[in-house]
Image 1: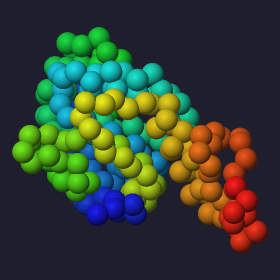
Image 2 (image 1 turned 90 degrees about the vertical axis):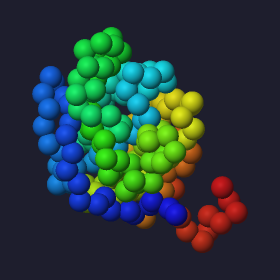
Image 3 (image 1 turned 180 degrees about the horizontal axis):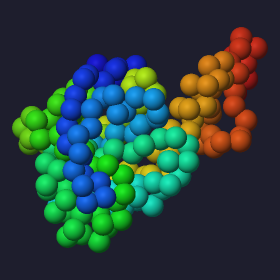
Image 4 (image 1 turned 120 degrees about the vertical axis):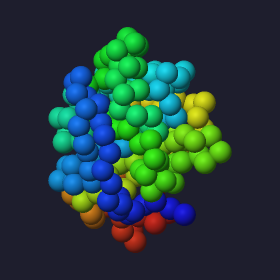
Length: 187
């Protein structure tokens, strides 16, 4: 079942950021763009490379009004321990959400019941908390922060310009397409 236009269910969970834990709820994700970045587990193999890559682009995401929330089914205390123990994770400045009951993972259908972990999935949310882009991939393949940033930028563009679409590899400032009957078979 497609998650496009799915609105997040009400939730409250704990987050770890800047050596503090604090509650995060659905209302905290409203009013700005959000990237929910699910990964299988702290203290694992591919995950730290992805989170470090996202950390290197965090300022770029913030400049376009998008908050990153990494999410795993670990607790906020495990996030803290990993942050202190791993040089790659020490670079993470965005909130690390704890989802030990898999509330978010189940809501967005990334939860793997057999393993008790979230699958590798990323979800771009509008300021209204609706999914406009997502992917869920094999747990042994890492994702690219540059491409995620580009997808957020393209999603923001079409959100603001509903009469236009972004072609493959579109970057901000490049030409878009205004669909029309005259373009059928021309592209």
